[in-house]
Amino acid sequence: MLTEVQARSAVDRCWGTVLESLAALPDDGWSGPTRCAGWTVLDLARHGAWGTSMEADALRRARVGEPGTAVGVEPDGGPAAVFAALRTSVADLVSELGRTSVGEGTLVIPFGEIPAAFGLQVFAMEAGVHADDVASALGREEPLGPDVVAATVAVLPAVFPVLASMAGQVGPEGTVVALQGPTVDLRFAVVDGAWAASDLPPTVSVRSDSDTGVLRFALGRIGTDAPGLTVDEGARPFKTWFPGP
Image 1: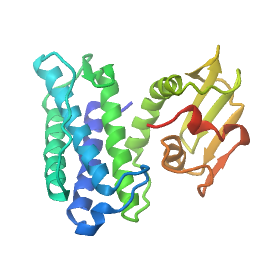
Image 2 (image 1 turned 120 degrees about the horizontal axis):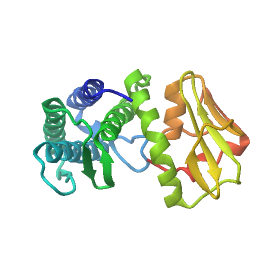
Image 3 (image 1 turned 120 degrees about the vertical axis):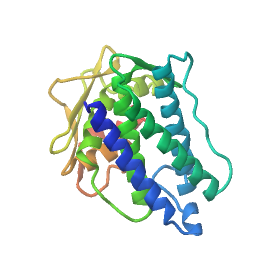
Image 4 (image 1 turned 90 degrees about the vertical axis):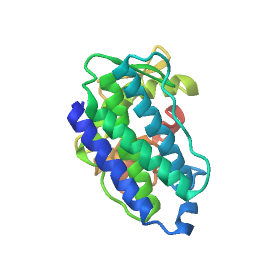
């Protein structure tokens, strides 16, 4: 897991890259498609403004002891308004990350109460993955940073079984599916009719020649036919089992 300093660095760098890219975007670029189905670049930026404002509010509430669930603000309007809102919310988030240590505290976000240390991994993952989404939408394919990889590897074992329980799609009992890259090795097993993170030997695998490739697949950004990806036949329903995030 990333330290607080590492998480702040990842968030600052990744959202900073997004802001730099969007600042240089021509007017017609905002309507371009992204890897997120049905979303334009403007939609992605609007979501980023909501997410970063919610994350900043969660940290602020924890810092000052204010009860309640963190609130995010999704901006109205066109590119100029959305860009301004995203720039402000990113600055607020980076500021909150630098103001105090989260220690053993908790954060209350719309999806529930989570340990603050885990929340920092989520925030770093979100920053890195959405920066990757923007880069791809603008025609750039760049590897995820090692810190984003580390944060994502910390988040998925907790998140994927929850997504699987919501989807209600379970593989055959005893299935152990692995997501494997040069340093990534995440495994999920069907135990007593439900998915759980596992360290058992895999029965089927999704393998990539890069950590970025296998994590993009895990997050639904690329499909089973993507270059550099090898998907065992029995692992092809992976995104049916674990939809999103």
